[in-house]
Length: 511
Image (cartoon, rainbow, N blue to C red; front, top):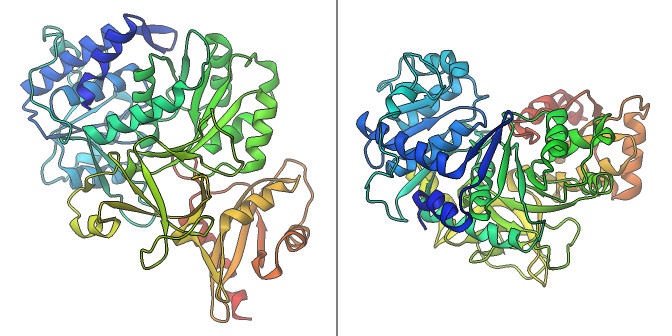
C-alpha cells in the first residue's frame, strides 16, 4: 500500500493510454510517470529529504498530478493547498508545517510571495509552468532520470498533510500515511468497479485535487484506469461542454455543483447521454435535489460520507444493493462504523448518536497537535463529531454535525431535517438552518432561504409550511429570505458565517 507505485501499477495493468485530457491536449500515463520521476530527482537535488513537507498550490491541471506524484516518489510529504485561499490563510499553513519548497504557477506566484513574507523559515518557491522563468523547474528537470529515485518508503510513512477548512478556528493539518490513502482509494475503487459503465471509463476531474475528496478520487481513477478530463475550476457550461465533447461517463461532485448544473437554463441543450453515474460527497445532498437531478440527466447519484481524518471516504452507496433514500450507504470494505452516546457506549440500530470509525484509513493525528489528536482518536476509533444513526442492515444516515445540533427547551433539533423540509417547498432553492442563543429556551431556530427566481413566497408562508409538517417547537421561529447562502471553497454552507448572520435575531429572543 504505497502511493509511489500507483503509476507503475496503472501502466502494468492498463498499458499506455491517454490518462489526462486538459484544454484539448492529451497526456499519457507513461509520460506523467516519467515526468513525476524527473521532478522527484530534481526535488532531491534541491535538498528535499525523506519526510520533508512540500506545498502544492495550483488549480487542477496535469502539473498538479505530476507534482503530487513527484513529491511522493522523493519520499516527501505532499501538502495540497487550495489555490483560492488568501495569502494570509496560506501564510498560516506555511508557518505551521514549515515546508522546504512551494510548487505553484505564475498565476499564483504573487500571492505565494506575499504568503511567505515574514516567515521564520521561508521555503523556496518554484513554478511548474512550461516556459523560461527564474522560478520554473521545467528546465532543471529535463536532464533528470525518468526512473523513480531509490528512496525507501513504507506504508506507515507520512504521504500527505491535508489542512481542514478551519470553520471553527485555524485549520489543522491532517497527517495521512501511504496506507491511509492507498487503502481508502483501493476500497473505493472496489465499490466503483461494481458499476459496469462501458469499455472506456471517462471521468470528469472537476473537484479540486487539493481537497481531500478530490485527492482520493484522483487516486481511485488511476486504480481503475480512467481517462480523466481535467477542468481547472467548476463552471456549469464547461462541465456540460466536456460531458458532450468527451462522452464523460462519471464524475465526483459536491452538492453545490449538482445544484448549479440542475438549475442552469441551457442544460437541456447539451448531449449528456453518456453521463451515467455521479458520486456525491463532502456535504449532505438534499433529497429533492438528488431526485430532480437524476430525473433530469438520466443518471444515478451514489452518495457517500467521509472526512479528511478518514482519508477521506468512510461510506459509499453500493450499487449492487438496495439504495435507501437519505442514506450515505454502507462502510467501505475494511472499515467499521458504530454510533455511541455521550459516554462512548454503543447505541442500538436507529438510535442517534456520534458516529465513530475504525480502519486502515483512519489518520495518524493532527500535525503538531497532540492534545487535539487524543480528543478525536480514542482506543483505535475516530470520533467524527457527526450525529448519525445506523439501521439494522448497516446503512448509515447522517443526521447533522454534533456542533450544529440545536437544543431548544431541552429538545434536540437537527438543522439538516429542517433544511430538507424547506427545500421540499416548490419555491425554495436552498436553505440553511442554525441556532440562535435564547435566555428563555436555550436556543431558537433561524432559517435562511434562497427562493427560485420570480417566486413571491413570504417568510410567514414558509413558517406556516414548516408548522404543518413538523411539531411547532421544531419549526423555525425566524426565517429570512436572502439572495445567497455563504459557502466555503468547495460549496458547503458555511454555518459559522450563517451563525454570525443570525445574530440579527438575538434581540428578538429576549421576548
